[in-house]
Length: 615
Image (cartoon, rainbow, N blue to C red; front, side, top):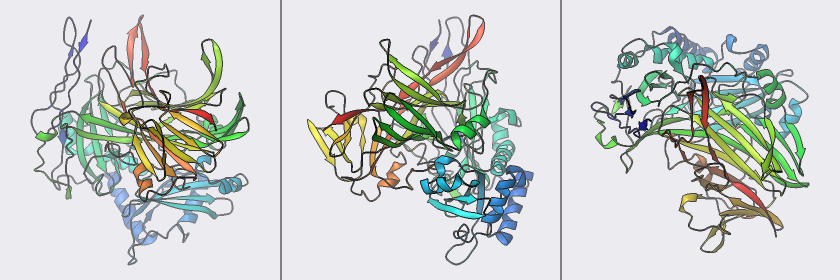
């Protein structure tokens, strides 16, 4: 019978690092991390401009600065014939080009990142009606100077711009060209070769298009666009993260991390993506459904997972929208930050600082977006079509739930992820928004934060928190940390949202729903509705790794009034994964059982329940 000692991760620039040992009754087994550290290139150590992928990209930038107002267009191989029409139109559209020069008229570097058929969740209601009668494409452009993403909806048939929005300080999914540039840099970085003791192989690489953040590096403080190609070595239970800065076309850092034990094979033959059916039936249109007094529509979004819209119960409006817009993933080194050697304060000519918490920890990680399986660069993609199943309690059917499964193609191998979006609807009018994480991730010390956006449809709404034995009204936008609560109304309810006639209690998960959950430990935000704040597909929010920031804070800058207003609730659970034998949580592994390899799942399930109030 084997015993596991909990892995302790310590980060040092140069010197001793953490040791992870797995003990078995008869012998030691598995990988022992003896050199886990953050690897920082020296100033001007890297020069990737001669790489074919980088050289071609630099030439494209030079050409764009002269010919196309600084915009690097997508290559023909990346887009279909209709997208080519949309791109040509946009490269000559004055409104689309309005932010390509600074106040002095100097051209700024922009890239078109994606052009694809318009996904219904990205369309405003009036635009959706128009797109039902014509052919619409959506394009995303990124300004590297201002860190701004522009999203355009184009009527391809009539060559007309239907809608244009700009998202300041937000970044899009990267193009195939930039993904290939990131791969080339990671594969040819001398630090990577030195760390591996050999030239890295592309077959060991994953997540080259996953946006990443390294605290207080150019990837964060300078608002650079960064991704994290990762080299995984399952036999040694280790992974090397390469943080690539696509703004400066350089390697910012490399970081060793343990993967944990795995016997998972490289693929699971039963998996199949029904891509075409998913796109046509669930991404490009809404699906209507009615049962048990509920009527609603649902759709798979481009980057915000499964979304429920326009839900009513017995003809009374309940929900305008509910979805999970992001999963923030932070990997924690529990000790060693105080020993970091920060004498190398510049990397690639830019200042680097290290975040040291009071508990001597250090963080790194990235954000996951869940999206449609085609025309999207999200890496956690819809797996099969949405499922609708009954909720059974004590042998009786009490409601139904809608489930969408999202997976990396090689899940449950290390550095692959699986999330489920689940929305539960009960015959008594209550409902629950649920996020499920089934790992496996890149290590055994991960903190996951799903960002849930819930917009009820009660008209003029007021919001309350139960405190000091009574309900206290919030008059302005606020946030609250659930673990700080000392009491609950009726032992269950911490919040409520109401109008003059009816409303809903909000019951946070504390493990009472009989799903083996360890609770939500959530932060709740109440903000005033604004269309640009998530009513349509939302770009990635916030930092993966600043645990005191969930990204929603940007919407509370002015603390506007929310009393008798349209209120949006943001609910961000906080989940620590666990890989200890007999205590697995947010985890998955493949084990030999009865002579066969069997995938074992240890999901973590979070999310609040809403219970109706009659006033």
